[in-house]
Length: 231
Image 1 (tube, one colour):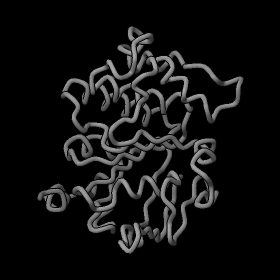
Image 2 (tube, rainbow, N blue to C red):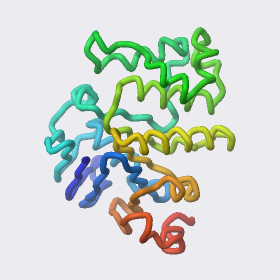
Image 3 (tube, helix red, strand yellow):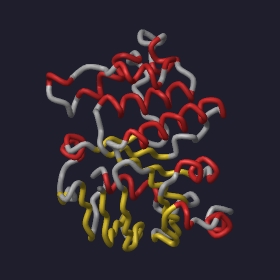
Image 4 (cartoon, helix red, strand yellow):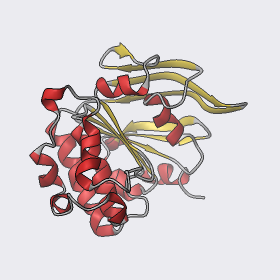
C-alpha cells in the first residue's frame, strides 16, 4: 500500500501541497480529481521524487521512500505515465519500450508478451518512430513502457487528455484489467469525471493543494464531487 501523510510541498514561496494524506491499495484504482492548478500533478511528482517535499511522509510497502532518488523509487516498483506522455519521438516503438528495462535486473529485461495483448496496435508498429504515432497510440505506448518495468504501483497523470473516445475505452479496459489482476495499486489523476467514476475504487478530490473530499466509490456523491470540478 502507498500511504501518504501530511504532505507539504513548495514551489518557491508558493505552498502547493498543504497537508495532503492519501492511501492507494493493491488491487484498487484510487482516483485523484480536481480542476487545473489544484496540485494533482505536484502530488504525483512528489510521490515519484521529482519534486522535494517540505514535510510529511511517503511510505510504500511499509518503507519510507521520501528520501529516495526517482530511479531508486522505480526499482521499488513505482512507475509513472506522465501527463503529455513524454515518449522519445526519434526512437522506435520497440526502443521506447526497451527504455523501461532501466530499473530491472538483466535477467528480466524483456518486453512481456502481455504488452501486445493489452495494446495489439503496438506489435504492428515496433519499427516505427514514436513521433510518427497518433496521440492515442503514443498514450498506449507510454502506458506500455511503464508496464515493462513490472510495477507494483502504476501512476497515471490524465491518460485521457487529448485522446479519441475509442482509445479512451481501450485504456479504461486495460486499467480495469490491471486492477482486477490484484498485484498492482493504481493511482489515477483525471479531470474526466465519468472515466474516473467508472474505474475508481476510492477517490480524493483536491482543492487549493488540499484534499477536500475523499472516500470509497460507494460513498461518492456525484453532485458534491462535480462542484469541485466545474469552472
